[in-house]
Length: 272
Image (tube, rainbow, N blue to C red):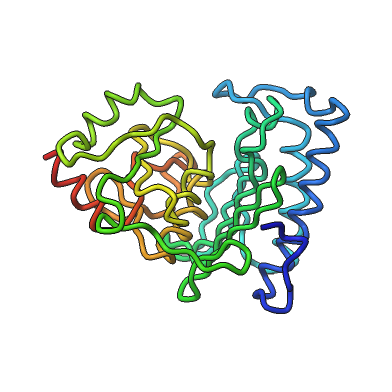
């Protein structure tokens, strides 16, 4: 469902504005990759790659968000910090740089408006496919103009689990999460980055589990998609994940379970 084909008048204004910019940024990213400009990248302190497309996307999104919401801070993967405010945009200008550099389509642009630790607006755009996923608190979760709903245990009692390809092997992940006890089958890593959260929001998978920490901008927009589709994203203690910087200005998110509330509750209970 390509954003270019949507009837924009039926979308909230913020989705239309940010969606148009994401389309333009996606075209830039793909053009850079086709021209081999994407191979110009450096390494961050944690060893992960950052390309010229990451940096250009960061600059353009920051400028647009400051124009769209004057006075609202912007926190980006490429320009982090710890603003002393309760409301801010949390931005990953190119989530899945490895996917991008390798020529695959699992990379995305992730945007989340956070207020007092809770995401109020979220948008994920996949330049490789043109798919735009968005949510606003109280207005539902959407793939373009198609409303989303998570799958439930009753819908799919042997539903699938998505795990990260860089997590411990599937057997270890299933053991840690107690999934063997409740009989769900696990799937290998068949989706990248934000695709897993989108798959849960759309009911394509019953749960996404991550057993190691990640960055807040990786999951904030996806969390709102899942919540507005009727699900939850909780840490491994059963608490809703919230978004604030730690004392050093780092934006880490804990291990988590995402899916319908009954599925997540069953998983947490089974592993106790």
